[in-house]
Length: 172
Image (cartoon, rainbow, N blue to C red):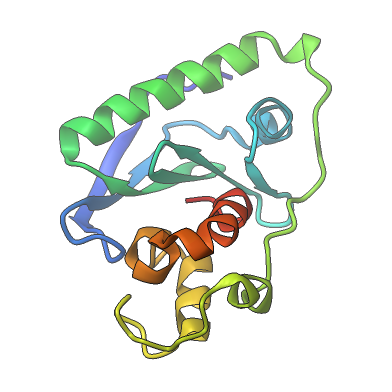
């Protein structure tokens, strides 16, 4: 199994950042068998064996792989998306070529819960992020519909520790 082609089937403005795009694509082959190996090799990959799916980050972009499809959010434009897709193909094919040397990780990632995120937020309900409450912002962070950068309070010195903890917890 190698990932040779990825055909983009849908592009639209990103909901989290309207200056960026989101997309859907067909992978041209079933890559579900490689997910446990990618989960073992890519730090902060989020594996869901029940679906199955695997989410990972490329800088600020979030990529979710399904057995025969993928989605990407926060790509700069279609050229950027294609460069990320080429990077992804290289990663998948490299891991597949080395799979006999890799101990697969079949454990599901346990994403944080909204209240865990909320506890680290300023809890001012200022709405400057575009959400009515900090709890709504926490939920949207987990749904990939918001970004930490949208909370101005988190940029303040007093919230530096909380911001770093959130960055580590969230696949942003």
